[in-house]
Length: 296
Image (cartoon, rainbow, N blue to C red; front, side):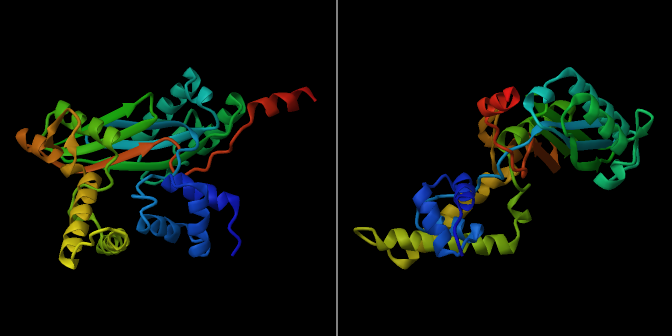
């Protein structure tokens, strides 16, 4: 299989490894990105593959609550200039209010919700005409809570990141503190119990091969028992960073999120986190070239 520059660039974006190392990894794995990431990690070239999909599109993530219901969604625009515009902000607020008042529970049915005298789908088409940029509605979710639970909602940098938490027996400030933490620390799981066995086996295998490769090049190789302990230590450290409850609390790193929440007589039930443009490949613009094209 031919290794293209696009594949090399994508792998470099995921791992931070050098161009030649990325090309070699792709050759070794016949162009398979995920296997190439593992190959680089095993060789010690890329120590981790935790980087999320490149944040590409512009726009805003929105979270709103009302009583026992909360919604969270993303509305994308083509440029950050439009996303910061007052008209775009008013647009997201109008959509949020309509969705919060509706019975919609998925993206497809959300597009049929009445907004401004028409459906959300038609409303977006009309807005595209007036704003002059393409708009995309995505990643809409509804979260419900019980009376004894509290929502924590937080939007960072005008919606670049939105976080929503649900806590048992918590006050508003505690729930919001955890939402702020989620926005800042980007946990992938609530606790280690939520990590799949398949992922654990995969990570153990990758870390074991990485450790064995390091050991083979060491001046004084370590015995097998020590290697196993090293792998378990790295695995536990990785999982601790991935899981919300075990992360150091941003407002007091001397205690974990779980310890902080427990001190408040509360418990985290769930969380959601969105960051603008996750998973969307952004078109790279050459501004100077664009201006020149306009003059021709």
